[in-house]
Image (tube, rainbow, N blue to C red; front, side, top):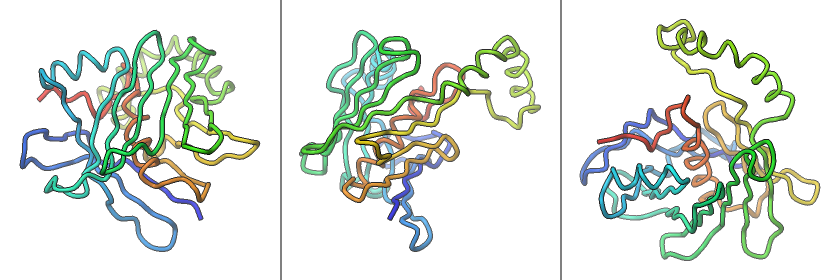
Length: 224
């Protein structure tokens, strides 16, 4: 049974207590309609939003998955363990603060041409994935001289309102299997392995799109 976690919303989250959420995680296991299982909110450091945005430049991220808009119960929390030299490591914690998984992101050209994502869970082999396929990256770079024109078209509605972005799909492999994957369509994480906790998929569904790059519009870059 595949579990599917999707990031929904425009990124117009509100950090002030009592504010609403436009970023949500929906869940489906194929046995019924998808449902909202978490509301996503940045967890701001001392210094507030300016400090968060400054830290994220080095790769740091921190956010909470709340059970609902009342913010009374945490589903999970993602914290940055370290972020430097092109590598960022994150830990997913449950509601009591116990670790669920560790994510490691190696920036493109630091350990290969593509960004590398590693998912580690206790007692299980690591799953390693790379952002995009080399074939599609080759096409992307081939047509990159046309990128300014595509950006102008997107700004004026000619591109359907979407900015052109590089390949984003990630397939994680472990022991010859594909336990999970991220699909750019709908910012969706598919958990194919039954041992994977849905909260890990939810955290990954929120984390990966936050690295969309300067062309994209990451959900956690709001300035108010």
